[in-house]
Image 1 (cartoon, one colour):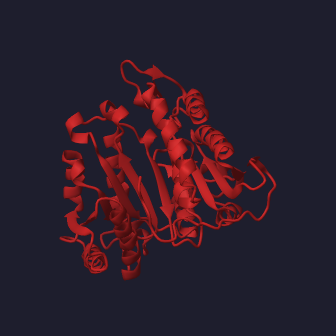
Image 2 (cartoon, one colour):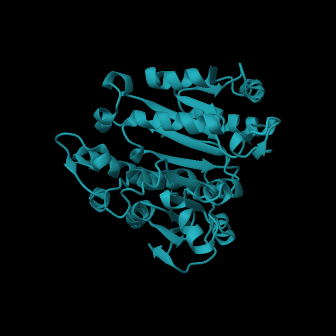
Image 3 (cartoon, one colour):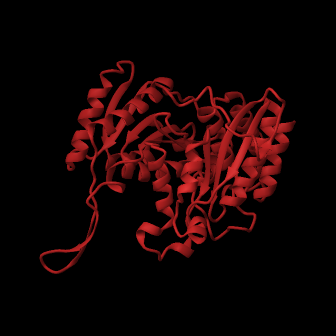
Length: 389
């Protein structure tokens, strides 16, 4: 990935305290405080693997990590009665970066809406003012055959979807339930964006596009929705500040079709919260598995970014050593590059993942004929061996 934007890399991060250091390197080591949020389901398993990888790369690169672990999602509900506690949010705000795994599970599906695990994630994003979600969809050469689409469709795909994260229908008010004039129960939400919200996400996307191929596709539904008409107007206006980027617009229904029909036409895409939620999941399956894809949620730099795999908590395989930890490791690599300004360490992690795949190691979600099936722990061990070789 070649992504850059103002304020993403905090070059002068400092650690206020030095207790509970998990990985300690030389005395002149660069120091970073990282809050770990393992969450639910397979989260603790893949977090353990990612931390071991970070410890290893820290020793190699002279980086000192201070890890602290906090609860979020269902685990927080069980312990504190809420999906995101004030203590967890405060710890995240005081960190240099946040590494999140996964939240949610069947156990909490019947809780009231405001107490479900997913509310913890929304609260975290809002509390850290993480308004931009970066979702890469890259088809690695080793995994072309793992995609459900034909080789000629997906080979060479490299898309970055920039999703607005703290506005739109997921956060808009009014929202709730009621009774209409006919006495029928209704549910309602509000999809709303302000000009500053659209302008700031557009600028992130334009700056990413500048670092890539210089093309940006804005996705909305302006033929039907007033909020999308505003979106299109503002993105177009903001685009005048980036004459080196070729801007196009596409309706979201067409984009959903085109991302499957001809994904290589896209490079950088920008869209609102709900459209980005859907399109980024669709794009992720071009790669063959959600288990390979990292993501980053960033803001203005006031608070740290959140780095997490795009997959869910997979409660059906939790605790069985079947999870794919590679997206978590790659999320740690994104954290190193964009959150902690450690590009060399990030590259080491990414190359180690590629080397493990080159040798044919696969977890169940990636398995194909002729490959070697391994579990979560073993895949982590293979990546560690590539790091240290």
